[in-house]
Image (cartoon, rainbow, N blue to C red):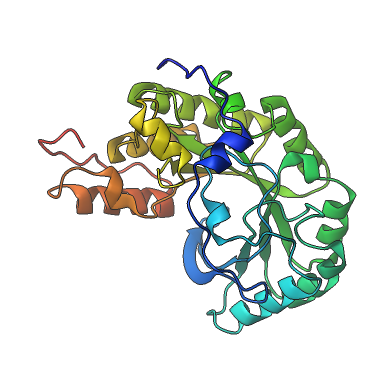
Amino acid sequence: MSKLPGFRTDGGWIRSLRGEKHPSDPFLPYGWFNERERGRDGTREEVSVILLTNRECPYSCLMCDLWKHTTDERVPPGAIPVQIEYALERLSPASTVKLYNSGSYFDPGAIPAGDDPRVASLLAGFKNILVESHPSFLGDRTLEFAGMLEGQLQVAIGLETVHPEVLPRLNKYMSPEDFRSGVEFLRSNGIQSRTFILLRPPFLSEEEGVEWACRSLDFAFDCGVDVCSVIPVRKGNGALDHLEGEGYFSEPSISSLERVLEYGISLGKGLVFADLWDLERFSGCVNCFVNRKERLERMNGDQQIPAPVHCACSA
């Protein structure tokens, strides 16, 4: 493993390296779009994704850039349902909806619990509903919200990595056992779970990044997670750019993302997806990028491992 820095990567240090936030309207989502995703039954599902404008998460994670679209204070009661209704009026019909609020849905300092009945009413007709949460916010409200929904609730918890030295440096305020307890709570109450696995967080070499992403997939599925999404770590939030300049961080390669996705699919323990947003930044070869992107898209959709892409580059 690369040498760890002598300073603490705590919230104050992370926030000191940030740029400016984007202007945010508490009554408008900052993004909404449709995508397609493979379901557990093998079908391709239409998914509506709504990026809710909300207060910044209380955990200033080292790799996070979601703070760029957040408000300084919790949005007013009733604002979240207004945002959801606004987005749904502009989205194509879908069977699954993902609500991302730049933090934890069940954080009382984020989305008021009093908004839950209206949110559930707006989501009537959706077969699956996905929200995010830190395990510390799972509890009675989670169960009450699940009971309000017509569809199946799925909660995403970011595991990130099980590396024993790197995870504490991410300022996540979560241990692997906290994660396991959160997944067990969800499973015991009939709620599905999803997690995010980081590919090459700071302080790891390229090979270490691949190794620990695979180990993290093993751990997540051992905990009983239904879906894993592999996220190649991107700079641009201030802290990672600083660490890159100090030699503690580099973005992973597209071939490493292929390797981790292949490994996860080969386990056959649940759905494994690669995050393909802004994928070209991880490729240094114009000759094979399109073929590699198409291969990753096929793996995401089919959960099968096609023949590798051959190129003279090292990708």
